[in-house]
Length: 315
Image (tube, rainbow, N blue to C red; front, side, top):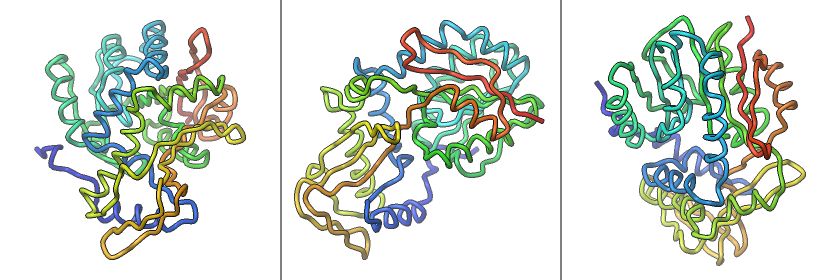
């Protein structure tokens, strides 16, 4: 059996993506590269912050409606969690599922995933847990098969994708679960921008540390010479595109080396590191339908800060 801690992302792909992104007029690095072991640890801390409502509110929705969600998943389903992280939320669902065929958590951070999966196996000794270290946007093989499959995608991660990419992912999920399979997804909803601003610019600076850790990772894994302290965290709500944007802004004129390449930064120039789109449930349901997924149920909190949908793959 392969030790997930020994599996890393493809370094060449990582380097190519970073070099390509920094060569653009608006420099950018894909948000999926946030999640090395330290990035995963920092994100877990973010989810516990007072200002960061999504995790707390989503857990509340789960606690209130998990029986209905589990019933829609159906008996003997294989549950597949994308971007599984610390496997915190899924426990509420696993406690209610009827004789699940197994659980497949998928995440790019192998060391973090292995640790979380080992703990879950200890807590659920009768459950077949098969962690997969992979980029879920690419093709990956399921280590266990079952006639009934449900993908669980919590945490509003869909919002990190551009609209066309999000639609492509929904089509991929419809194919993965097959006709009659399910897709239980969490999404952050449109709301007062002041609430969003506080969530992404916390007083303790944990989100800023999470953002800058991306540069620390590039230094370590790609041999770059970023000075993370010379970049400041910036997050703001783009009203036109209904999304939070996260950037790392250079505080000085500087040059950064990655291998044989060099990249110039002007003072005030930024690296765009993440988008987090905010959704309208009706609009998302229409897009999902065009991707072969029919909305069966939707749940929100009283403030309508967050939503969860159960989508069924069409035949």
